[in-house]
Image 1 (cartoon, one colour):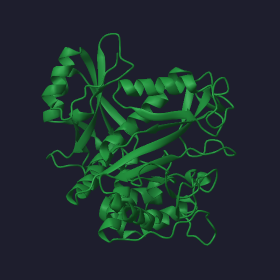
Image 2: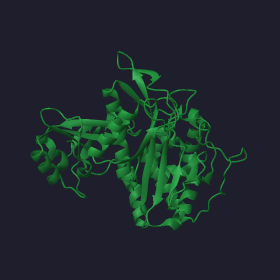
Image 3: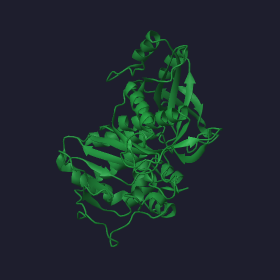
Image 4: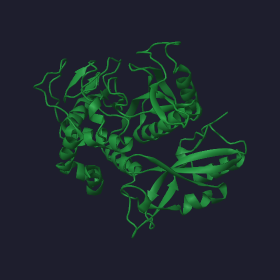
Length: 398
């Protein structure tokens, strides 16, 4: 059985003790580049105490968006609260993984560490007495592999929205994904077949911003690994098949215990959405998805209407909004950070929302229509430079 060692606040001594008790033989220390791509270095248990106290150095000049060759040393410090046993354990003992904080040699945080950027946004909200929770919905296609393990772009099935077996041939794969995640301490809320052939969706319960982002990163990795074990390719790209629905990453948000703040929070996001679209839809194919198959193209909101940029779902609480434009190519740590900052600005300035729009019309303001326009909007934003830093913005603008 694969277990997550769950304690609210773990110390490095707890992790070391666990490794001894559970015969852990290998430790993966994971982190993320500026685009949200997961990286890792592995150490043996004999190096674990050093990792916690002194950090494990790596060549930051080899990571896109980090440092140059003149100043190339950065250090990884494992976060003990992210420890989990990997489900594909070896026969010779357990393997665990922890996400890491990235620091300079003098111990100061690396300002382009995307987990650190999100932590700063969370701390700002905390200073205002606010906690923002996230629960995202992820769409992906399952394609068949060729004899070399490459993507054929041939869908696993020809099923449609919420179809069942035998039309839905991805049911067993989704079940394996959900059970594996549950054994790692991550509980999906809903899974089903989506609109496109071979397209699937798995949704998650609300959790704190950093935990939700860490869980999302783990989720994508687990999905791709399990699909590969089944001779399939899990494709999260925004538009893998031109004439079929794209893959979105709908982000649900709530302001914990402050339902009265939800509307100004939403107003803040609507106010800054053009500037931050590049970070929510960062690649060229992102814009092939927008405006088609219920993916939004206008800056609007509505109750229940799934064609709008933001909708307020029909639930027992109005303390929830769903942002429908992002896709899975985004760096989820930066996405969550920007949504928090924009929402907090809406609260601070007591912004009011634009009128509710049940049917989008051409007289509404549009989201950026292509990557070039999104980059231009980002490059003109002093607000983005103030919350993310000039270096991060410049890297994305290119």
